[in-house]
Image 1 (cartoon, rainbow, N blue to C red):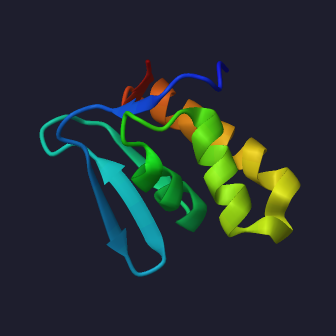
Image 2: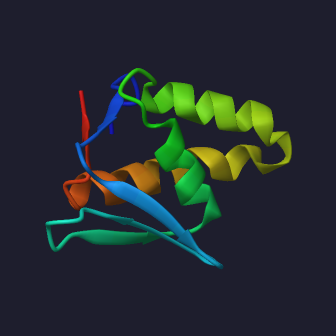
Length: 90
């Protein structure tokens, strides 16, 4: 994964929180993805301006005790989003 690329969410996808679950879905397409709290936070940081590296750096600063796991988590969630057609790297 090229960490210098920005993550852009496709239009009209929504994130909903239901008790302990987070789901990203499109209201008219049969595409959805369940995320944990970390995935939901990463989703919120995908604004088309921040690169993958920016997101990793930001989360590492916010959660210094999770250092080594953050990069892996960010890349995993972004792969899930891009594989589902919910986001693109640009």
